[in-house]
Image (tube, rainbow, N blue to C red; front, side, top):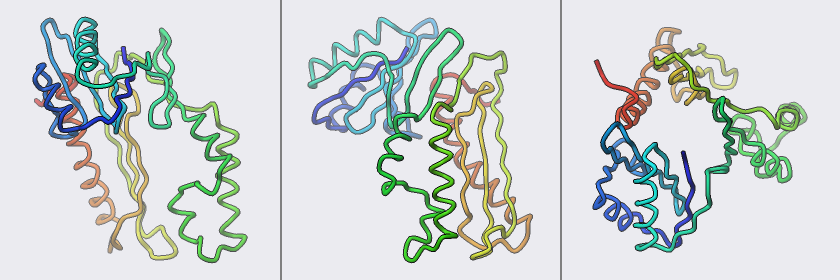
Length: 235
């Protein structure tokens, strides 16, 4: 289960000290995540973003307890089961969890001046029709795919898989290469990215190795987090 709370004037230092006194450990890979393990494999996780807190886990007793403790120390508002967080809409069913950005996308379409797309934004100084056409195409795509999203299922697959690749000198403007990667945990997508490399690779092998090095760094952080919640254990 996962619930969302809003805490008025949340002081991160005070909050972290408070939850630590109740047996929670702060993740070194992500200082906004706090974890508590209790007996029989029970787990409670707190995730903090500004003044919003997600409480998740399978220890119902501890979740009720930490809610009471926070209410004593902070001005807390219980928003109920997690439905919307950081632009993502979350819905649950017996089959799994669906995540979409329908509301966030609608907001972007209403105020297209706030559309933040780094690639097409390179030409904002003096755009011509050739620069605007891709922007219109992106907006059209967003409008036609409002209902699309991720569906996270409980699968038999218990592996963690990483895929990475890179082109070579694909950018016609500066001849830099573009890397791409994705990560699947238990058969479900959890991270993905496409990014232009910072330097010009002198060979396709160099572009590939840079992509792999970039992916390994982020993957190490992910494994650290998964280890904290007992999803991953190094061999």
